[in-house]
Length: 71
Image (tube, rainbow, N blue to C red; front, side, top):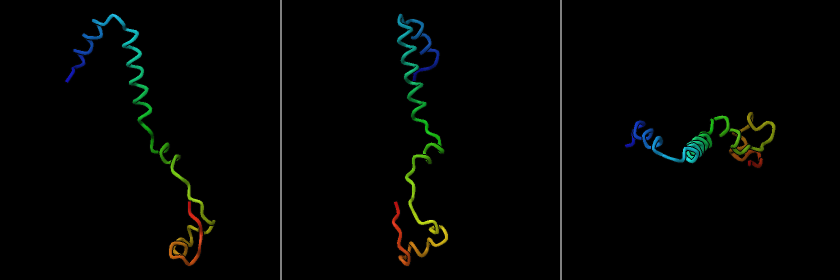
């Protein structure tokens, strides 16, 4: 495993600090895009299209007594 000190030594020996900086920025951007918040995930969930009384009569709809189209 590479230690922070080893990495710092290698960076100090590198002639192209601009390239190292770009690589670090790319890694940080990837980490940001990989972290999605719970609210972001919930916003992307598909919505249910149902009648206005679906919550009150869900048993009837699920048992087939009433008919509605979900999704």
